Length: 389
Image 1: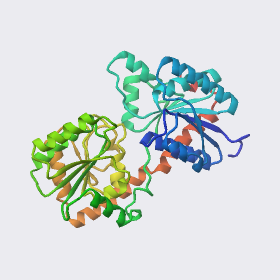
Image 2 (image 1 turned 90 degrees about the vertical axis):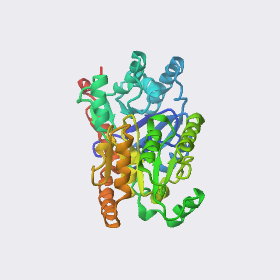
Image 3 (image 1 turned 30 degrees about the horizontal axis):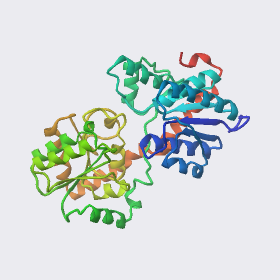
Image 4 (image 1 turned 60 degrees about the vertical axis):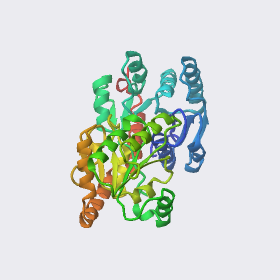
């Protein structure tokens, strides 16, 4: 903090602070801001994680940032501009589109630097939707959570490399550490899920939505032809039960009911990974980052994933993971054969290499990368040419 007249005040904005990767990343960065002696504020409509902000030294500012209507965004822009002036905010960081439109207007009105994090590819089939998404490319610096997203920004939003900073998403290596998962946790989970003894477990932790590729995995299991496996599809349907019911019908239709079960979202993913002989990420559309890859590696699990998006950047193909062609059930089945066929010694070597690889994506690196973007802007605040038009 040498040379600073006062602690810097950083405001992050997002719709809500419920459980999720974007929300957890916001909390992690807020903690990192506070730990280095600066002031961390987060504006949102509230949620479970909002209660954790005071514990990490940050402040929650309750505002209806989830509003998506033009009127709601306009009102939020006025609220944020007032907050920036009243609290002496030095930089605003937006993590979602509707709040970003409000934050962009407020930042331009007050003259403070504006940062965005591009968390996904978003849908842009219509020109109107692409224009709505484009606010996430208007930051003075645009943080891309993978090299894939950096490519996407250049290709579809004409963002120059001068404004893009790649900061991969982080993984909590204390939480996702086999040494820190007591056996009672995974034994309790195994009993709750009624897992049979001595049967290999295939785990697919993913939201129950079509693009995650559950149907491809079911096809791969049919092609695998083994009855001595247990496959767990673990994820929330986000109160949209139609796809879950469709999955369950397909499971029965294909004669997989004795091997496949669909489970509600798991609150103890490290324990679930401890039960897994192989972890699957079968997305048929590119993952912006694909945190399952780094979580699985941190837990020492063999991974079978699709070869697109941000996942290939995280793994060592043939060493820690098998990468299958997207939507190719035969290739995915071959990956399952590879993982399930690993002998004890090979699995042990894979686990050690995978945990080493996962350390490259530790939360600490993510937080340091984001803070470095803040510092870059704040230290060159007078250079108007470095900002977006």
